[in-house]
Length: 256
Ligand SMILES: [Zn+2]
Image (cartoon, rainbow, N blue to C red; front, side, top):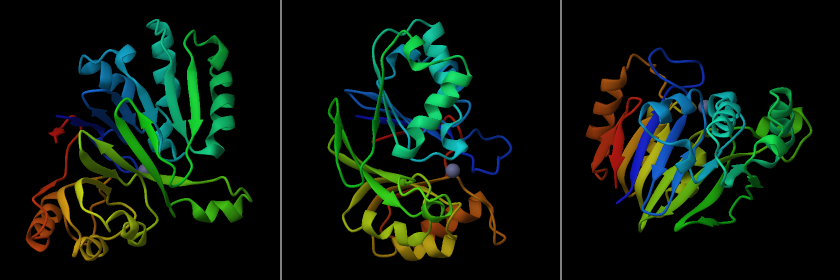
């Protein structure tokens, strides 16, 4: 049995009553933070979760609604005397800016007092960690910046996760519905999909012939006259093959 806890479900524009993107994946073997939007440290501690118990942090992309909680998480872990290593998975282009940010915060990595094991994602290359594996899948969310900033290492990822014999897909932020296609060619037990960078109509079309057990929509932007209840109703009515549809609030948990 594994648990997903939605620590932050807001979109990048700042959603009243919602924190920024962060999810705790808790399997039998590992406790992994998927993205570290603010205030993930507060959210973890408020739930009685010891920061020392965190086994890894996996970051999908560099936007601050997914990363701004990293320095605070590291500062709090240092103050709370973490000693064991913390693996931190990052897009390549974020490594040096993060190190500079930490130095500016008087948290240089060498002063953390625990090993911060930074590793970088390569699209399609699986990483296995204490029984949980992830294949990072490229999304087009940040592609335009590769040319604008002339940096081909700029990349955003979805996470294709195998945990407890189940396939969990966390989209992170995508560039549009076309990014969902390669993720949905095989059955998905739990799809955690953002709904800020594609319309509900595009989502419904992308999922029409998919095999998805449970659909969780996060990062939801309400538009086209539909509120969250309306979005959920549309999904439930139009996606016969999906067993359950959730639009989780911060703090909600799903077991799988
Ligand atoms: Zn975002």
